[in-house]
Length: 225
Image 1 (tube, rainbow, N blue to C red):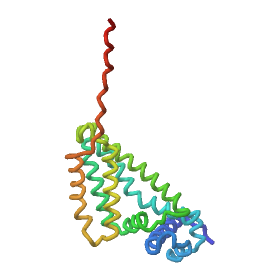
Image 2 (image 1 turned 60 degrees about the vertical axis):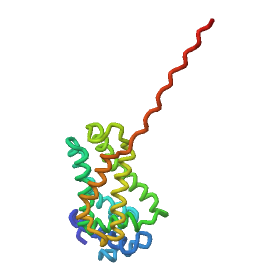
Image 3 (image 1 turned 90 degrees about the vertical axis):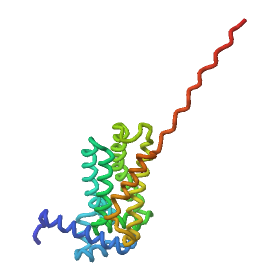
C-alpha cells in the first residue's frame, strides 16, 4: 500500500473534522460515536486514530480550527488599538458577529460549543481547557480596554474588569441567542447598531471604580495641664 503523503494526511484530517462538525451538530457530542464520524467522512475508524487519540481530542481540534479567524482578529485588534482603542474594539466585535452570520461552518461549531456539548464526564476537562484558552484571548480585549482608559477615550475611573465582563457577556449572549433562532433577525444587518449601542452606553455611563474612603486624621492629644 502506498505511503500517505503529507497533503493526503491533511486532506484526511480536514475530512474528519468536517464530518465531526456535522455529526456533533446533528446528534450532540455525547450521542456521537467515532464510528458515526468515520461513516460520515467515508473513512475507517482507524483513520480517526491515526490523527486523534479519541473523541475528545477530535473535538478540541475542531474547536481550535474554528477559533483561527478569531485569533487573527485579536492580533489585528492589538495593532489597530494604538490610535483609537474603542474603534478597534468596535471593528473586531462587528466583524466577529458578521463572520458568524455569514459562515455556516462557524454557526455549526458555535452551536456545538453553546448548546450541544454536555458538561459531563470527559467533556468537563475539554470545556475547562476551552474556557481557559478563551480567557487568554479575552485578556487581550481587556488590555485594549485599559488602553482606552489610559488614552482618555474612557474616564480614568472606569472599572475595566466590569466593562470587559459586560462586553464579553454581550458578545457570547448575542451569538448564543441568535443561534437558537437565526430567523428572528438579520445578525449581519444588526451587528453595527448593536455594537454601537453597547459602546455608546460604555462611554456615556461606564462602570466606575469605587471611590477610596477618606483617610481619617488622628485626633490631637489634649494638652496636659
